[in-house]
Amino acid sequence: DAGVTQSPTHLIKTRGQQVTLRCSPKSGHDTVSWYQQALGQGPQFIFQYYEEEERQRGNFPDRFSGHQFPNYSSELNVNALLLGDSALYLCASSLRTGSDTGELFFGEGSRLTVL
Amino acid sequence: GQQVMQIPQYQHVQEGEDFTTYCNSSTTLSNIQWYKQRPGGHPVFLIQLVKSGEVKKQKRLTFQFGEAKKNSSLHITATQTTDVGTYFCAGPGYSGAGSYQLTFGKGTKLSVIP
Image 1: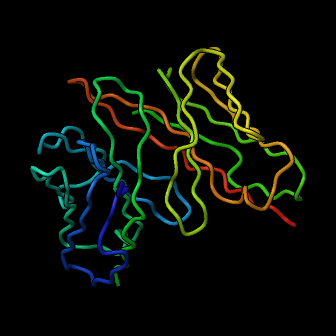
Image 2: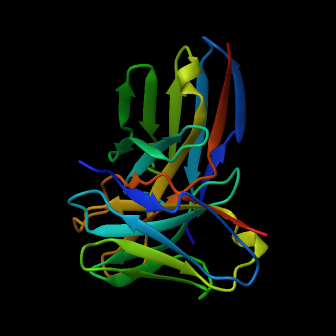
Image 3: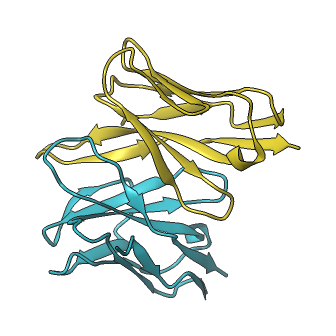
């Protein structure tokens, strides 16, 4: 049973460029959440997708956008990259149960460096 | 918005010593989760606490949820080098329509000196 997979694992971009990160959730999971983790910090919630719609959004600018596909996989897009966007981007999958319990399964993350 | 705070930020212990990290939420939580992230790794779920005053044990790890459901702690007895990593607590935050997201603390980074 494959866990959460993310690609690419590492990438380097320059300021102003755009990046797309990809995530396949754990088998059987229908909800994908994206987190940004700066060095030495806890994961910060970006947004969550369920049924191909953005359901919740954290305090991130519109430069951050996403998409969920019918097979539940998801993409995170960041436009007009800034140096401060350098971080580990984590995808977490879960099964929407209607309650707020239930663990998140994280992928290995995509390490983005913006020069 | 909801805030989750953890102390200490760093803890260095000699192998065999005990370790405790504390988590406090600005709001009452319906439940709290704990995750561990090894160096260079990703967060891995450890446990979830739901009931007021709940205490759960996993081998040398003891997790506690406060009576007011606003604080929690993780205690490790007789630390080992395998305990090295950053421990995060996380609580659910809501934005309506039955949706919630987990808000993470900044974590406590544990170093174990052999």
